[in-house]
Image (cartoon, rainbow, N blue to C red):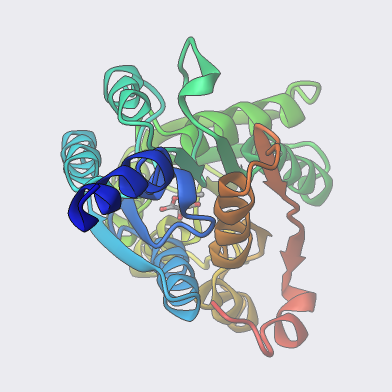
Length: 317
Ligand code: GYE
């Protein structure tokens, strides 16, 4: 046997049977795609920073896509991650429905998908590995209970909803309604979406003031940014936010603490955006073959004005 034929035989019998494709041998995914919603709020910016920072720390090459608040852009991003044969995909789905087709494509390509911060409705849950998020229904309940307590169960409430069709908007609405249901004096007199944006909160609040005059007692905003926009509108209309009108929102970003210290926001329910470390631990565990729970819930708490000065110290977002 010639030397060359001998080498070929060795190659064929020993080396070729091993599969060196990245999906099999990569214990630690090295190339990961992140289809982010956009940059609508301070919370979103903090989440992006946490995930980017953690990827960098671990030497993961992160392909980042800003979906500009549109599902179609996020679907395109996921398809491009498939085309690039990435090791894993992180998806923060803007809305709950409509993901099934593209997730079937990721499954066919054998690329695991990790959902962050927002859930989806699919008939087959095996289309994604896990969802790392807060319990939005519970956040809504916390806000509702707080308002019942502060108003003695009597309040005309205006509600600023998050992005239409998004899990946090749907669930925060549901949880809040549940918490006030037993209290007939608690009435939602207006409810509209401000798309989780400061500008949206301001505009919708202006319209509410236009329609209601001073005939409302409280604002429930699905996130801090919209509450901060509403505070501007209330100020401009000569109302005293935090005093004439009670305001509670969700997220607990730094600007909310500043507003609580200034006395214009009354309370905020925390929703932790610092997903990076837990997310990449989970991606690595999955690559090692460990079983991952279908839902990983971050615990939340409520902050009031009296907690603000102390709590804001050392906060990362
Ligand atoms: O509360 C809001 C944001 O999905 C939990 O999205 C997230 C929400 C967050 O823009 O500020």
